Image 1 (cartoon, one colour):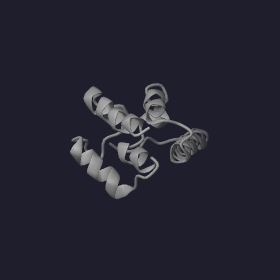
Image 2: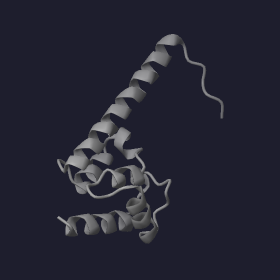
Image 3: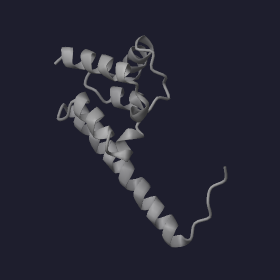
Image 4: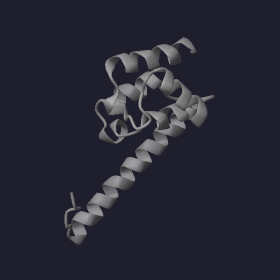
Length: 106
């Protein structure tokens, strides 16, 4: 599907919206890393915030304290979560399993 032709004003608006979404995701990842927000809060926010719902699960897990790419990938494989899965696409069992793991460690 080709990209739509946008006039300059629509293009500026789309670029501003994309920049805002990136800013929101970056702030959230920083808050996760610092322990200022829990995984449950992130998953709850993703239900209503489109910018968060489109984040990959791997990005969120890698932002968790003590987690990096390898540990996140291993956990996702154990829970049968695809590497390309986004927060919005998590199933109820996958979501609950993630919460069990991270809330047990708290």
